[in-house]
Length: 107
Image (cartoon, rainbow, N blue to C red; front, side, top):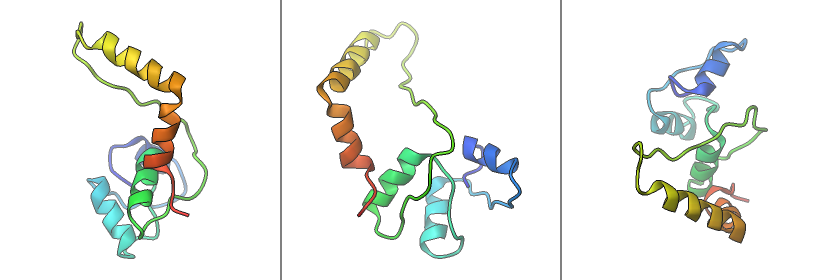
């Protein structure tokens, strides 16, 4: 698990003894090298890594759905453009295509 994440908080309440890592890359490396059997982290990040790295595979069910956001400064002149672009991508089905391209697990 990566210290300070929602996954770490969840695991603290479970009857397991997780091994904390400061960065996701360190946890990926530990799994890939067989130092730990698995890691527990955000599904999109794991799926992306699994799709790009033949040493890892994302498995299991999502245990909780979380939202991601885009941070902009208060009163940003870009807010309307970002919102409009996201809506256009969603309506055109492009977000689904991006999901399939970047976050699919290898077959």
